[in-house]
Image 1 (cartoon, rainbow, N blue to C red):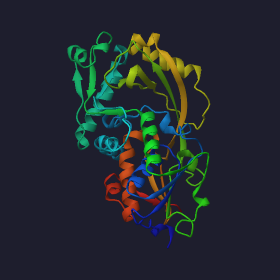
Image 2: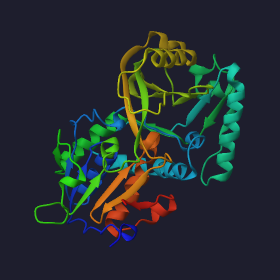
Image 3: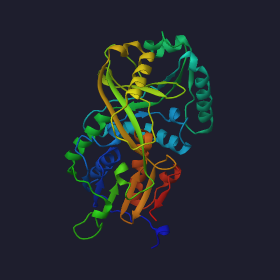
Image 4: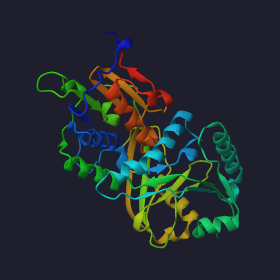
Length: 373
């Protein structure tokens, strides 16, 4: 079989023994899903159970397909819509509760950035007219804004409301998946860096297949991967109450503020083409905090819980990828900045490939199943 014609050999589920490399978001979702179906699952990760080395730990976990349509391909937006429908179903199967909210996204701007806001509005309105199932944005005047988000009414006189968008708590989810993996008998191997070369699938004493979900850890096997650095600040702000994620239009950096439970807020914006994992710079930290303060003055008395950096794995076109390394090894990678938004689509497409060797869902999302040449 030549690389061009290579296909993944379907598994016998629930009898399969699966080895998963990487215990970030995709690794844990796949481990939980396969173990729930009765498969024997081993998962290996270079780090520990807290997912300290995973991009998923340093994320706002916003589920915002219309907002992301300004910078993403239509296929990614379609995957995001799929994710909005699927996340409630996935979360309902977990033993532990995970914060999930679907109150929409609010987009605000200061008067000097009104031109940028108008450009964004035109882009989002075009997306809503050309992409199936996207709900058009609503323009809120001062009275409507005061109704939707009273805390912002004094600083902003209009806003865009992106209905139906959502968010979840990334760290609660990672912990809940870990707990259920353990409950279902998944064998976890921490501080155990592995690569596909360490396995000989479908041979005596080996798993039936290998799923490589290592993110940037897979670059030796998928050289096209690159790192895109992000910086996120977590604040505890008892004086701030927001009902939904807020995005601030800015000509240089699009700030987002994602409110979690108990007045915890995840604030971010930076996106740097770099795999540098050093601590955040003074400049970017000051810019993020200053911008947050311009949205709500209550952030002045907030306490900084954490300033975190991580690199998201991205492919050249910034779209996710499925790749067959051999007929028993499948790679899932390149979720970039859209990890939580598109993870359910990647999960469902991957499960179809494991079961059937192909995926109609992957075709629907224009997600090619490539082969390693």
